[in-house]
Amino acid sequence: MRAVDLIQKKRDGHALSKEEIDWLLEGYVDGSVPDYQMAALAMAIYFKGMDTREISDLTMAMVASGDQVDLSTIPSIKVDKHSTGGVGDKVTLILAPLVASFGVSVAKMSGRGLGHTGGTLDKLESIKGFQVEIPEADFIQQVQEIGVSVIGQSDQLVKADKLLYALRDVTATVDIIPLIASSVMSKKIAAGADAILLDVTVGQGAFMKTIEEARELATTMVNLGKAVGRETVAVVTDMSQPLGRAIGNRLELLEAIEILRGQGRSDITNFVSELGQMLLALAGVEKSLEEVRSHLENGLALAKFEEMVVAQGGDLEDLYRPVQVQEVYEVKAPVSGYITELPALYYGLFAMKLGAGRAVKTDPLDFETGLVFEKKVGDRVEVGQVLARIYANSEIPKVMLEEFLENVKIGKEEVEIQEIIEIVR
Ligand code: URA
Image 1 (cartoon, rainbow, N blue to C red):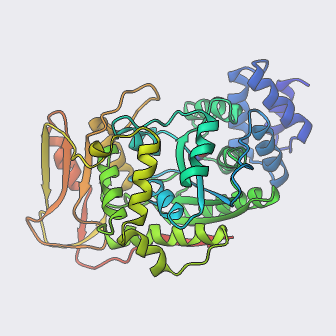
Image 2: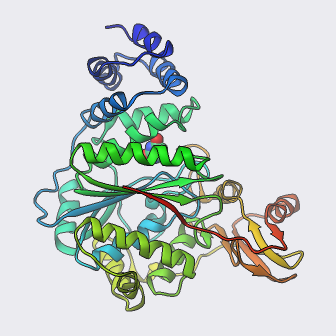
C-alpha cells in the first residue's frame, strides 16, 4: 500500500478498508507514514467524513497502537468518565470521590488543559505533592485499596492518539466527529473500565457548536463503547457559559471542595449529583438523587477525596489553602437585570492569558490565577454588585477589564438554563 493512494481515496470520498486503516495507523506509529501525509489524511477525513464501520476500525486500530490497562484484578465493576472538553469543568474532582464513596471503583486517566479548556491533571497538581504520574501497578493497587485514583495517561496507552492529537491541534482538524470519537473512545477502551459515562459538551465553549452535532458525536461514541461490550451512556451538556463559578486550577479545586462539602451552587451540585446517579446506575447501584447528594452533605465524598489526595502524595494542609495572588480585581455590574450570557470561550481564553492555561503544550502554568463568577446566567444582579473576581499575578490592562465587562450580557428577562440537555443511551 502507499499512503498517497489512501489519502487520494479518502479525498475522493471513498471508504477506507480495515486493512488500509490498520496499515496507515501502524505506519504512523512506526514512523513510516510521515506527519505530512497523516495531516493530509486528517484533512481529507475532515471534509469527506467516515462511515460507522470506518470509525469503528479506526478506533480499534488506535487501541491496538499501544498497551491496554488490565483492571481484571479489581473484582467490582470499574467505571470511568470523560468530557469532550470545557471551561471551568471540575466535574471529575467531585464525581470520582462521590461515586467511590458508594463503594464503586473509579479508575480514571485524565488529561491536561490546552487552549481555553482546562485539564483535571493540572487542577490536581495545584495540590502540593500530588502525583499524577504513578506506575500502572500502583494505580490498580490504589483503586483496589481505596476505590479511586485519577492519574495521567501513560505514554504507552493509545500511542497513535498522542501523535495524532498533537498533529490535529496544529492542522485545524480537531473538531470533526470521526476523529474526536475515535480519539476519546480508543482511550476509554484501552483504559479498561467496564462502564463509561461520556459528557459531550455543546455550545460556544465546546468543539460541538450545535445540539445536532453533539447528539451525533454522543451516539457515535455510545455505539463504539457498546460494540466492545462496555456499558456506555452519554450526556449532552451545556458549555455556552463556564461550568460552576471558577476557572483556573487552584480556584477550581477550591470550588470542587466547596461542592464536596455540600456548600456549592445548587446548579452545579445538582448537575454532578445527576452524573453521579448515572455512573452508579451503570455499576448496578441504584440511588435516588437525594441519596447521592447526601454524600456531599455528610462529608463522605470529601473524606474519599482526602483519601485519594493522601494516597497520591498530596499535602492535606495545602489542599485547603486559599489562592496566593498579587492582585484581586472586582468586576461590578454596570446595570441591574438578569445575566443572559457569559461566553465560555472568551472567559476560558481570559483565564489562559492570566497564566491559568496553556496556549501551546509547553507553556508553564500559574496554578493560582483565574476567575470566580459571583453571578451566572439566569441570576439577578443589582447595579454595583460584584459580578466576578479576577485573580492575577500581573497587572491587567484597563482595556482588558473593559472587555471582560462587555462580554457579560445583562438583560431585562430572566433566562432558563439547563445543564444536561439530553441523555444518549
Ligand atoms: N478529547 C479527546 O480526547 N480527543 C479529541 O479529539 C477531542 C477531545
